[in-house]
Image (tube, rainbow, N blue to C red; front, top):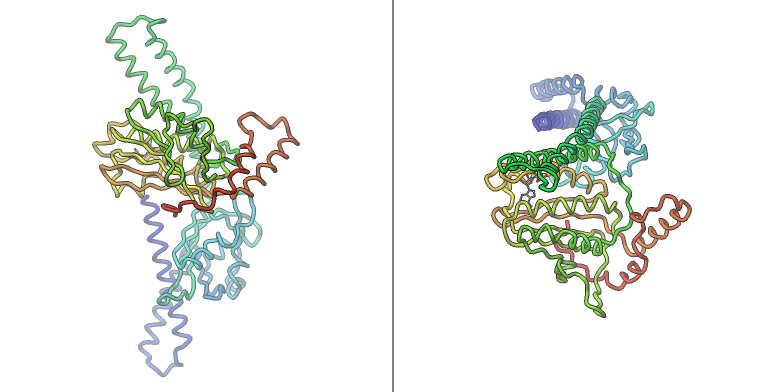
Length: 468
Ligand code: ADP
């Protein structure tokens, strides 16, 4: 966190220096030749000297782009990182110098690039995972921060500050590798201990006195927690370096959520919490009796998305488990809504709620709210981090709205497929599966095409509340 603040402050200083340098250059161009106000001229010269000392000495790359997209300033740091000499880069369009690729080495679409995003939104953009292709064709991991230069509301240019973060990425990946190997190795003995403790507690196979039983019960609960921690550590390490098993397919969210709700209702019942599933903005399906009566026909919009159902189940189950854990009484609502572009799921509870100051940190690794209401509830602080990583894998977004003492709602937005897109992908998948029959497992069968066909008439009136 501290590193981010320091890096953020550094970027801010450089942006100010670069902007001042540009303004000074612009002013000096407009300035009348010597003989005018010589004091002003010398103070501007001083200012320019200081700015150029800073820009020439820092390791970070600094680039200044005018409103036409032409590079006006390219410091030595930028040359060292990109391999482009200043005199080559200055005067060129930024697109000729800054080529970005994704993790599969494919060109990133222009509207996703930090410069284009900052220009389009007139907002600062930070991208810590940009892969830049240098002049000689090497790909290096970089971190970019691009700030718009505004004159009132008018965008007059962009200042980009960037760093080579290859070393940090390498270290991060080594750390993740270590955590992943260690937790994988430790899970096995922990599972064995948990198994033996269960046997010791089983009256049919072991005899222990009541005091020993109490101790063994506590040891069993802690071992179970340790096993969960190792499992979460392993999953989070995999999520970080993109090794989570991921087999996306077309999923109809209504069917998926309805099934999941009925699988989850026992856990809610155990805590005496009501559970309901709402589809659209009106149809409430009681989780304990979700099958429509014979002859009854429910017409509802179909929400198709392309995800790995196992991964999505992990996310919804985790949010649901949290809702149960942090709710003492009332109800949990699972909901599904959307518009043409987005399918939105939500998990709402009537629980403790989350303090506003904790909300921005909630999806970070190991973050747990530390207050009297939550301290006694066990957890690892990894569930929401893993959930965010999974949802981002599918270009989705996850966030929470909460009122302390009243409850929380976690939202997930996923890109929605139209019925035509869903059908096209389903038949494409069927063709691939037919060509490779050995690859099809019962779990991977696509959803039925008859369900897809019945969707067309019902997608018109989709509520759009809470879509963002
Ligand atoms: P944990 O294993 O601690 O539950 P998570 O990453 O799933 O880890 O959640 C992080 C923290 O967010 C929790 O420790 C809890 O303080 C808070 N939190 C998550 N979900 C809820 C909820 N539905 N209501 C209140 N607090 C929640």
